[in-house]
Length: 91
Image (cartoon, rainbow, N blue to C red; front, side):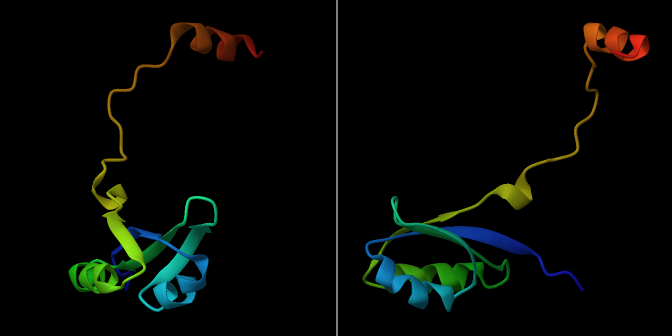
């Protein structure tokens, strides 16, 4: 069964605290320069993990990723007429 997951962007103060952030979810990416990390957690546990992360002293803020809620199937996309002509020509 596929679990529904959602990303959390965790802004922190020091890179040495990254090991503690890993405990709350699956670490995908961390930026040394901007000092943030992207972790994925289950959507059922999202609220509790977000409050736990905000309670940590080294965490500045936590943002949610809205990727699961964005519509990705597009309808009525009209192709460009110039491109259609090029495809028919075999260029």
